[in-house]
Amino acid sequence: MDIFRIEGPVQLSGQVTVNGSKNASLPLMAAAILAAGKSVIKAAPRLSDISVFSQLLGQMGCKTARTDNGDLCIDAAAIDNPVGDYEIVRRMRASICVLGPLIARCGRAEVSMPGGCAIGDRPVDIHLHGLRELGAKIRLSNGYIVAEAPKGLTGKEIFLGGPFGSTVLGTANVLMAATLAKGTTVIESAACEPEIVDLANCLNEMGAKVTGIGSPRLIIEGVTDLRPFEYQVIPDRIEAGTFMVASAVTAGELTLKNCRLGDLMAVVDRLRNIGVTVEAVNNGCVVARKAGSVIKTADITTQPYPGFPTDLQAQFMALLALADGNSVVVEKIFPDRFMHVAELNRMAASLRKEGPAVIIAGVKELMAAPVMASDLRASAALVLAALAAHGTTIVNRVYHIDRGYEKIEEKLNPVGAKITRISV
Ligand code: EPZ
Image (cartoon, rainbow, N blue to C red; front, side, top):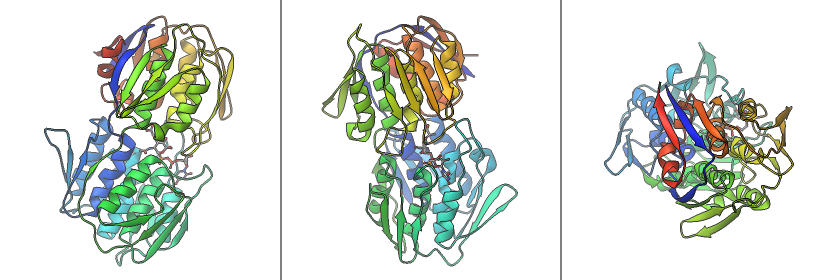
């Protein structure tokens, strides 16, 4: 198990290139199931979650491989075992998005029911509701979701909203299943996240007929078959947002390459409000904060896209911990996603959780401490805090970070960070 030793404070300066998106790549890998043949995802990041998803596809009968130039190839010529095994699903909840494509391609699927995780209960009832509406017969057996549609699926008007608004992977599941259904499907209250737009664009490249892309009303005319794809995944907006905060928290100046500001408008708006400059440049942006300038306070509420993303809530908390006064962060997607609060307080932050909100009393400086990574984005927040903190921070359980950030130390050390990975 690796740990990070991080020396601070540092001031970051230079250029960092953002990877292809993890959360767009995973549904694209599931979409490969829909076509008998070899699909290629260009710029898929080299992350442990991508490797785990490759294992999942491998157990079904797909062959996955990386080419020398980094493309991820998925050969789904034959799927002889339409099963999502418990041992894999328990490691990665995103595995659930094979359910829709498997039913559509094979007429049946057995996928382990995901449990809760560090960020909350995370039910999949809306996924199942949508697939049932398309005609799948679904039951739970020994912890597995067993779905059958031997005569295929049939298009329908489906409302897919839930208590916290739209669902990203629920939309992906129902959208993928509907591409091969008979007739027309309308998904009302669909997720509008850029990752869903990317998936829908890729499905259309495969021969699907999806319109309304990027809106909460997706219309899908079913087709009889789809062809394999070769498709470049979008840049990772959450990795980009994390580097933006890295620049802001260290009073640095980072140029981010392969970054689409349009996917990050809520984040850019908050950064500018608290005194950080964000300027668009060719294929990216420059994010800077003057040394010695104050970080202004902010009120942030996480929301479905285009609102402020829950996946950047923890990282912003590390930044607002150093703001000049009190800030409030309200979590409206995963109300329990606050495992980082106690760890940031160990670094001399002053955060107080009140139900689904955290009140942040800004402090003058953070202090290094040994801390524990609990989930992917919480871990990123600890790394950001450590860059600004005085002394040597030890971040334990770095494997959480490796799920979503490709060698973060190799990206940040060349621009001034002092992060050492140690195997213990
Ligand atoms: C995706 O998870 C992302 N994962 C998450 O990123 C992200 O935090 C989340 O969307 C929200 O943006 C991937 O894309 C792989 P949801 P997903 O279904 O699709 C409730 C990261 O750090 N809900 O949009 O699983 C749910 O509990 C990760 O990279 C139901 O009630 O999230 C939550 O409150 C973590 N019933 C809300 O909806 C359902 O059937 C939104 O969740 C489904 C969801």
